[in-house]
Image (cartoon, rainbow, N blue to C red; front, side, top):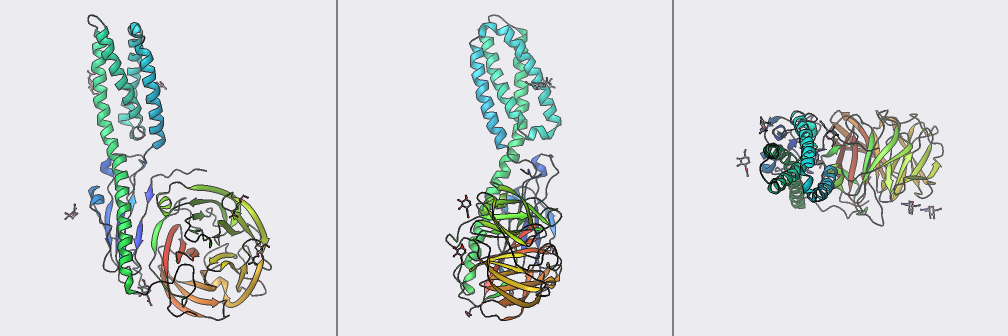
Length: 512
Ligand SMILES: *[C@@H]1O[C@H](CO)[C@@H](O)[C@H](O)[C@H]1NC(C)=O
Ligand SMILES: *[C@@H]1O[C@H](CO)[C@@H](O)[C@H](O)[C@H]1NC(C)=O
Ligand SMILES: *[C@@H]1O[C@H](CO)[C@@H](O)[C@H](O)[C@H]1NC(C)=O
Ligand SMILES: *[C@@H]1O[C@H](CO)[C@@H](O)[C@H](O)[C@H]1NC(C)=O
Ligand SMILES: *[C@@H]1O[C@H](CO)[C@@H](O)[C@H](O)[C@H]1NC(C)=O
Ligand SMILES: *[C@@H]1O[C@H](CO)[C@@H](O)[C@H](O)[C@H]1NC(C)=O
C-alpha cells in the first residue's frame, strides 16, 4: 500500500532540554490542488510559556500572525535563552513530480527522434502541416484546459506541450525556408506557435516558483535545523556530561527534557494509536533504523508499519519501506536487533518479526499473561503485553491473574522469546498510563492532566527495590500511547495520539 500524502507536510520542531519558549513556522496547508505560489504563506508563530511545572501552558501555546514566503529565507531557526529551537514547514500539494519529469525527458527524446525522421521527409510538408495543424489544435485545447484547471498544470503537463511546441516551431521554420514562395498556412501556424510559446512560458514561470521555491526552502530549513541543533549542543556544558551511550554508570532517570515534536505519523490524524522508535542493535549501537507503527483506527491491530534509514527520511516522509503483517495487537511494540516484537493478535503470545524479511520468525506464549484488555494501561487499550528494550536487552511488562493485575516484569531471550527471569511488583498495571525500562529499572507514568504526565513509580530489577518518583513529562496530546527507550540515544520515543515525540532522558550522577 503506497500512501500519497495530501500535501507534503513536515513538522520539524526542535525543543531544547531547557525549553520555555516556542518559535515555530507553522504549517498552513493550502487547499488541495490550489496552486499559485502566493497561497504558500507560512505563518510565523511565536508563543511563550512559563517554565513552571504543571502549568497548562507547556510550550504549545501558539499565537499567530501571517507572513509570506520570504519569511522562510529570513527564518533564523533560532533558539532563545532557554534553549528552544523550532522549525516547521508545510507544503501545498505541489510535490515535485520527479517521475513525470523523467517521463517527460523520455518523451522529449522520443519526440526529437521523431522530428529528425520527419525532417527527412520534408517533401511531404503539406501532409505534415495538416498533421501538425491537428496537433496544434489539440495542444490549444489542452492549454486552455490547463489554464482553467490548476491541477493538471501543477502536474507539469505543459512541459511536455512546451517541448512539442518548440519542436514544431523549428519544423515550421525549416518548412518555410524549404518552401519556395509563400504559404498562408505556414505563416499562420508560425504565429500561433509563437503565441503558444509565450503562454507556456508564463505558466512555466508560475510552476517553477512553486516547485523550486519549496525545494529551496526545505534545504534552508534543514540547514537552520542543523545549526540550531549544533547551537543547542554548545549550551549544554553547564550540566554534567551524560553517561556514555549504552552504559548504566549513572543514578537512574531523574528528569526528562521537554518533548521534541518530530511529526505527525505517516498515516495521519486519524491514527491516534501506535508506537515508534529506533532499532537498538548492541553490536551496532549507532545504527539508524527508525520504525513508525500506527495501529489501525480500531486501536487494536498492527497491520502496517514503515521503516526509515535516516531521521531526515522520516522527517520528510521519503524513502520509507512499508510492510504489512496480520496482525500485531496493541502498541506495546519494541524493536531490538532489527526484529520487531509485538503481542500477537488475540493471544497471549509474543511474535518476533524479522524486519529485513517482514516474516514472523518466532511466536512464543508468555506463560500466564493476561491479554485482550484484561489488564491494559489506564486509557490505553490492548496493551496488556508491553515489550521494552533497554541496555540489557528485551523485556516484557504485563500482568497475570495470580498477580491480581499488578505489573510483572520478565526478561526475555530475544532469540527464542523464552522467559529468563521474572519480577513481581506491587503496582497495579491498569492504574498506570504507560511504562518503559532503562538499565533494568521499570519506570511507570500516570496522567496528571491533559498536558502533563508524571513518571511516578519505579521498580529496580537489579535490587528488587521499588518506590515513588515525581518527574514531570510535558505532552502535546492527551494520551501516551506508547513509550520506547533507546539506550544509545538515551531518548524516549513517545507516540502521543498520532504525534511522534522525543524526550532526552536526564540521569542522576550517583551510580547505583
Ligand atoms: C526537569 O527538566 C525540565 C525541562 O528541561 C526543567 O524545566 C526542570 O527544571 C527539570 N527539573 C529538575 C528537578 O531538574
Ligand atoms: C527579517 O525580518 C525582519 C522583520 O521582518 C527584518 O527586520 C529583517 O531585516 C529581515 N532580515 C533579513 C535578512 O531579511
Ligand atoms: C489530444 O491528443 C491526445 C493524444 O495525442 C488525445 O488523448 C486527446 O484526446 C487529444 N485531445 C483533443 C482535445 O483532441
Ligand atoms: C494569441 O493568444 C491570445 C490569448 O490566448 C488570443 O487572444 C490571440 O488571438 C492569439 N493570437 C493569435 C495570432 O492566435
Ligand atoms: C532475517 O531473516 C534473514 C533471512 O532469513 C536472515 O538472513 C537475517 O539474519 C534475519 N535478520 C535478523 C535480524 O534476524
Ligand atoms: C537465547 O537462546 C539461544 C538459543 O537457544 C541461546 O543460544 C542463547 O544463549 C540464549 N541467550 C540467553 C541470554 O540465554
